[in-house]
Image 1 (cartoon, each protein chain N blue to C red):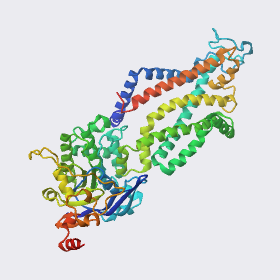
Image 2: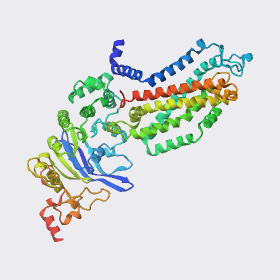
Image 3: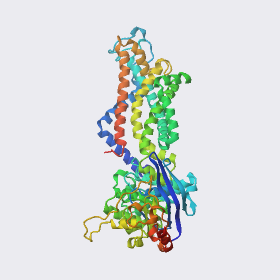
Image 4: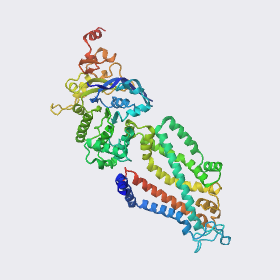
Length: 333
Length: 291
C-alpha cells in the first residue's frame, strides 16, 4: 500500500431508535492509501453506507451518533474537527457520490448552475473561470458537448449522464478521496460499464483514492486494488482484490463468492448462505456470523474474533485462522 | 455590450422566452394575465381614464343607480363609484402585493430554516407561529394596527405579520420533504453549510408553492385590509379603497345593491385573476412537470 491517506480505527456508530439501540458499526478499522481504489462489499444493511457517511460526518444526529473510534485523514482526526473545518474538508478534500443519480441533482437549477456553485464554494475563482473548470471536468468524464449540458436541467439528462455529471462535480475541486456509494447500482449494465471505466480513468489520472461501495462483486473485481468485506456492522476480511477472489479466507466471503451463479458449471440450484442477516439491535454474541457459519466451533459464539494475517496484506477476522497454541487452548476447554 | 449580455445570459434568456411561450399556450394563464394586466393598467391610468373626481362630493346625486353618467351609480355622498373603484385598485393592489411580498418572503425564510434545521429550532419557531395563528387574523391585525397607529403603512405591516405563519407553515412542510432528497445530502457532502443549503436548495424548491399560496393570500389580504379601513385603522377616508367601500356599502345593500356589489366584483375578479395565473405559473415554472 502506498502512503496512508485515510485510516479508520475502531469506529462505532449507533442509532438510537424506539425499537432499541442499533449497533450499526462496531470496531471497524480500515486503511485507504493515496490513489488506491478500495472496494467495500457486503449485503444490504451491513453498514457500508453508514461507514462512508461517517467519514464525512453526515450521520443524522439524532438518531445516529459516532460513539467511538477515530477517523484519521492525512493524520488529522476528522471526528475532532469543528463543523467549520469539517465543511472545508467536504467536497474539497473528500467528496461523495451517491447511488441515485436521479435525485442527486437539484431539479430546479441547471446543471451548470449547480456545478459552478460547488466550484465557487471551495475555490476563489470568477464566473468565467468556474465555467471553464466545469466544461473541462465534463470533458474529462467524456460528456459530449459540455457547453450544452451545462445549460440543461437534470431531468433532461439520462441516468448515466447524471452520474457522470455528479462524478465531474465531485472531482472538480480535486479531492484526495472520493466516497462512491453504489454509484452504478441504479444504472443499466451497459451504462454501468461505461460509467465505471470513466470513473476509473479519471480517478487514476488525478490520483484520487476511492472508497468504492458495492454489493456487486463483479464490479469490485474489475475496478478495485483492494477489497474489504463487511458483515453485520463489521469488517470481516480485507485483502488485495486478486487474493480475495483467488482464495477467500472468511467463510462469509467464501459463501458470497459461491453464491455468484456461473454460467459454465451447469448447476441448476443457486448456492446460498443459509439463514438471514442478524438484527443489529441484538447481534449474535462472539462472531456475528457464527449462527450462519458452516465451520463454527467452540470459541465462535463466545469471543469476537481478532484479525489474523494468514498472508501479507490479507487480514481476516475468523477463529479458523488462529494459531496452533490458541486452538489447543480452545480444545482443552 | 448587448451582444455580450446575450452571450453571458444565453440560457436565462432562452428559459425566459420558453416560459413565456408555455404560458401563452395555457388558456388560464392568459386569462389570469389579462385580468391582472387590466387591473394594474386601471390602477395606473386611473387619473387619466376616470370620468370624475373620486372624492368630489355631490349631495344632489347621492345614491343614484347605475346609468349613463354614473356607470356604477354613486355612493351616499354622491361620489361616482366607477371612479372610486378605479382609484381603489391602486390602494388594494398595492396593499396586496406589498403584504404578500413581505409575508411571503419572511414566512418562506422562517419556514425553510425551521423545516431544514428541525428539532429544537423547528419546535421553537413553529410554536411561536402557532401562537400567531391561534388568533383570528382580523383581530390580531386590528390589535397590531391599533398599536402601531392608524395609517395605511401600519395596516400593511400588521396584515403582513399576521400572514407570515401561513407561509412559514407551508414552506416548512415543503422543506421537510425537500431535505430528505439526495441532492441535499450531496450538497452537504460537498461542504455546503446549513444556510447555504436553505438558500440555494430548499427555498428555490419551495418557490412554486409560495407563488400559489401568495395568490390565494392576496385575496384574503385585500379583505382584511379592507376591514381595517372600515374600522378606521387602515386607509383613511376619503381615500377610495375596495374593502372600505364594501364595508360602508353593506349598510345600503338592501336598497342600493350597486354600492357594495361593484367593488366586491372587482375584488372577486382580481383574486380569481391572481389565482389562476399563479396556478398556471406554478405548472409552467416547475421543471419537473414542464412541457
